[in-house]
Structure formats: structure tokens, C-alpha cells
Image (cartoon, rainbow, N blue to C red; front, side, top):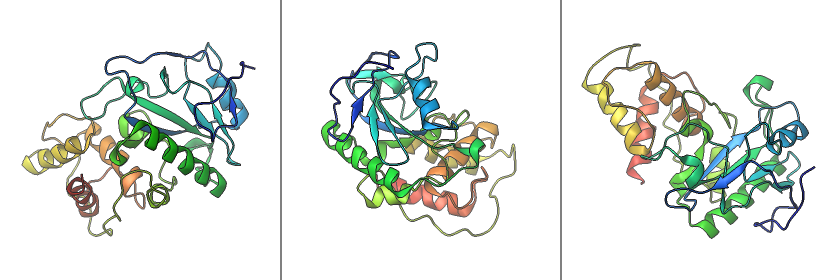
Length: 251
């Protein structure tokens, strides 16, 4: 197992150093927090992957089901957790973020609920990080937010509202479901472009094509997973659009 050192956060019980990291580039400091699920059968398997040099994958922290927290990469370093990603004009999210992996089997494992102790630990760790790094609430993100075409984690069962009530992240009460999809697949026109512009203004990476194409659907699904989790279908309905508008108005 990797060697141990003193964690940056007092909430972490161990520092199990992963070799998978580098120097932060550009601005050189973290100003966003990205949450992931491990998506593996066990936490032990996930930890083995995150400290295996052959995997070329890591994160700063790992939160176990029982609330234990391990640190794997120094906060000052660039962990390899976001991959190809984009948010608010930035494409090297690894250089400007802190990544937390949360032990959970994920979608392929049936999307099990996150235990209360695990969520309480995640909130406590996030609060510590946000305070020390001065990360704005609206820059607490899902992996699926920054890589909507590739990733679904931490998923629609992740309790974002509970995090918000604990002082972590940006949230509004989702507007109630009503009516069907506003746009058909591949529909074109100014209303589609307006929706794309709102999503891009919030931070999502997509071009203002005016076409409700596959990528736009993926971005809408990512938004729903985070902010309107009662129905995640990639269809831009009135609830999705109104919830997005409310979030933007609070920025």
C-alpha cells in the first residue's frame, strides 16, 4: 500500500499517497470542487485503482460508506479525476479543482443510496475545503456537470439538496414537473438557442447551434441529474427551463 503522511484536512484519517498527480497549471490554485462516485463493486477496489500508477487516475479524497475519509493527493497538487472536461471557459478542470471520490457502486451497480454517515462526512469535508480554498457555492460540481457526454456521477440519487442545506453547493427547489418536452430531437430555432445560451451562461460546455442535438440532450440530462433529479431524460421541459432560470437569477 502507498506510504502515509499527514493529511491536509483534519477530517481525513489517513494519507495514502497516490503516485497519480502533477503540478497545477495556469492559475495554479483550486477554485472548484468536483464530486464523483467510485462506480466500483467495493471501496477497496476503488482505492486500489486510485493508487495504482498504471491506472493514471486519482482524486484528492476518498469518502467511505461509514464516513471514513482518506486523502490520496495533496490539495496543492493536480489530481487526475476530471478527465476531458469543461466549465465556464475552462478545459483543464484538474488544474483548478479538488476532487472527492465517494464510495458508491453507481448506475451500473443499481444506484444504491448514499449512507447518512457518508453524506455527513462529505458535507463536513466539503465545508472545510470551501472555507480554506474560498470556493464559491456555484462551483461545487458533479463530474457529470463538467463531462456530460461521458459521465453520470455522482448520479441523480446523490442528495444535492441535503448538501446545500449543510452549506455546500448551489441549489433552488426544483420547479414542479408539468407538460412534456419543449423540443423534438434535432429541432432548430431561436428557442433552442436561448436554452443553450442559458446552460452555457451557468457554466456547461456547449455551442449555441440552435439545434436540439445529442450533445444538448446530454447537457440537459446532466443538469437534471444535479438540479432536477425527479426526472432525468434529457428532455428540456418547462420544469427544467424554469429551474435553470431560477439558478441563474441567484448567481
